[in-house]
Amino acid sequence: MMGLTHMPVRDRLLNVIKREFEPLRFATEMLARAAKKTPRAARNWLSGTNAPDAEALIELMASSNAIAAEVERLVAERRKAREEEECLGSSSGFAGSSGSERMAGHHHLST
Image 1 (tube, one colour):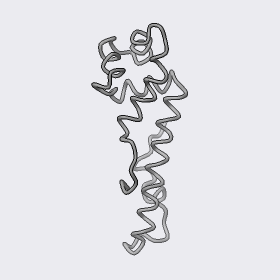
Image 2 (cartoon, one colour):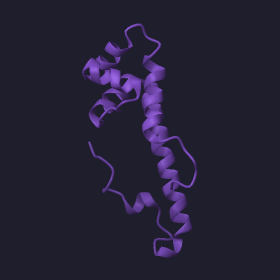
Image 3 (cartoon, rainbow, N blue to C red):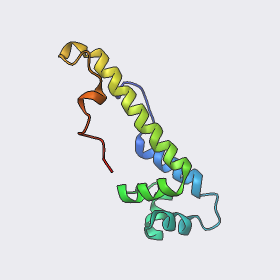
Image 4 (cartoon, rainbow, N blue to C red):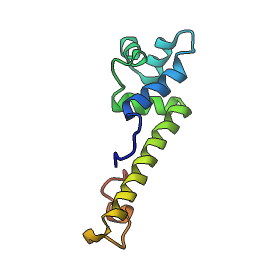
């Protein structure tokens, strides 16, 4: 899954957050408000010191199409890498079923 050299997930998330918020006049305050977190937390994200927790990330995805799209790209890349691994390991007894069939109900949230 990690065979290709990719920018780490954390860095990709922080980069898209910076792209979205740094150009704004009150970037720290607006980022904090969008994530429902403190300005200090937002400042740490913009400086690259820390990354948002899951709750803040969901809030940011809800407030920014660019952040949501980047997270969706990350998920798609992970899924593709897992599928490629499964193809390589098809002799493991799982040949003939896709990853989504095997994991149905286990990793998908229902509403």
